Length: 312
Image (tube, rainbow, N blue to C red):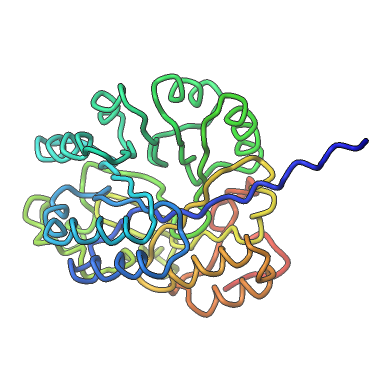
């Protein structure tokens, strides 16, 4: 008598928090569309970059949360990725105290407030090895989104351990990559303003501000205090391999254009309704004005595209 084959794990799609300073109405309408149209299991909400932005969205938060819940989405509140002021601390404490919702910690200061309840570890907290994964799991983490610069070998090793100890892992598969954070606001400085008197100048760049070399070549993106990749991460070709590592969730990071189309393309590949090449073509049609990359996954420079065809 032969044993039945182990069913193939099909990861669930998630939507990371909006990282940019969109208008409150644009932010609201985006999430209402996600609630009604996007086949994602989980949606992360919250201001991750700058606490000054958070109050702008408060008038629409209840409506968005209700609509997402009615749409069958699991809502998780994300904390700031950097806590440096009293305003930052108060916002972090407010998010950590959210009743009835999971919280994603993106800064170690949040862990003090959520250590006694199940929670999620976000990609801004470095989990690079087995010991750090075990530490967070032992202290209440039920889901960890790995840093986007993790190579396949590292994802595979942590996926094996996560399966053994019963914790879910999440991997970003689409969107610009967060690379670094600073106490200073790059956007304000670029416009000759201070961080405290920035007048929300970051709202002029709905996908961040491109940073160029002296030769005029774009190579990074600035988003307030955050440095991001100029390229847009795209791991659509690696989905089967990522799933084989036992990864439970795949994160798509929102951009101002093409996010819903990206969700649909990834969902169609996971459901075997679209092949890889067709999905790539659809993503090319709707992506932001930046090339795709997957270098980090293949243990190469992050901006590189490793594949049969370069996407320029």
